[in-house]
Image 1 (cartoon, rainbow, N blue to C red):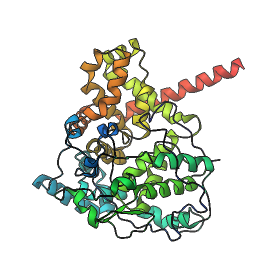
Image 2: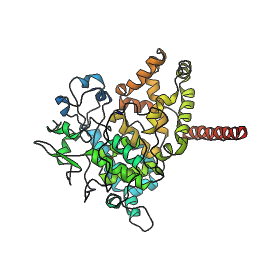
Image 3: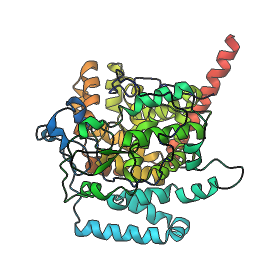
Image 4: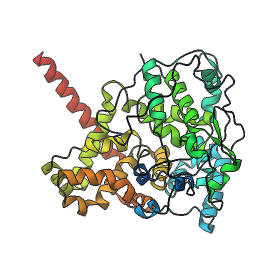
Length: 438
């Protein structure tokens, strides 16, 4: 039975629940009789959280920043501007190092994993981030495995099959697709793109015009006097529906849409599907357990996070307890999407560079770094002010600074493992006590 369980909090409260789902009564999962799966990605996007407060009908929003998000002169002042992705000499050297690693990936992954780890912490060059993530997700191995007998289908087969997701999964996916990164050129409504965006051609977004190798009416949008643009909503819908067929027990859960949309910004539709398979089911990420029945892993990571706050930020922890602030009020949305739904992508992509190599430790470190950065302000606030500030925090966080702070926090996997073990023991004790009361 497919699941479309909602997270146990208003985790994605910025979502506009008034969105009307698109037509979901389709005979096939694909949006085209011959669905293409090799649409190239448009890389280097960054989601400006403050844009959620702007009208997307404003003509000025057709101008994009270097990451493909619509901007105006006014909103650019409201939040820190991400560092420009210029071809500086240090960046070029880093890119060459990563290109060498990718060319010799088997050697590095088997014998020089520490080098991958250290370079991922310094940031994967944005120009080759998608290719690097694909290597970390072992995408080509998964594609080959899908062609073997008794394995899952290939992505093309999912698109072309007559299998249908459950109605509940389809309904939820269609509703979520419309409200995923609505201010990004890939995912904005087609009406917003009637005039071609004004790109900063000196940056990576300038590559948009030549980014597509295949385009159809279903997966691209024709502008009035510009290039066809990737229809991110159609691509996102297809990938999420395909995954709901791949993992029938889980189906779809809210939060997966933001992670998948992020992958579509950096890689082809097919690779984004297999990347989702990887982060949901394989080490070191294994996000799937966040969404399963009972959401046990969600409870576990929240427990670990709360205990780490008690240890590293005891004063703030006491203040939160006094003001009745529960950590699931804000940390759930951070953890379920690994920060991808509300923070700027100069932070999000850095987190994911490290997350794909090291796993959950960076998620906890970033949480601690964010709270430590704004601890002084939070200590002076009451409940209402704290909740408002935490919702606004993503607009204030500077990505490179937060990552630098996070990596300085002395946190070992051994401490995390001990806290996870304690959670499991406490849960078993509670289950036994509950059984005795029955």
